[in-house]
Length: 95
Image (cartoon, rainbow, N blue to C red):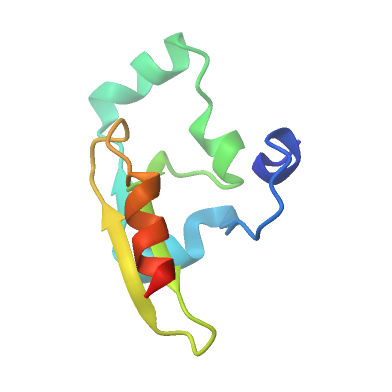
């Protein structure tokens, strides 16, 4: 089940199988060899989730893009627990 389906979202959500776009944007972290067994121990199968072999993680990012393809706002932080505040997104959309 996709994120859109699971959360019943009514707006488009980027899906990036194989991390192609993430790689182009330079927002991809390759998990060090010594951490891979830890992920396996927690039943986190990055290759299966990503749809390819490497143990890679995208840096969490949000981009607000207008209808002309211009990025009007964004947020990124390697700490996946840090996310853009919804009110900041709304402020950008109002402009």
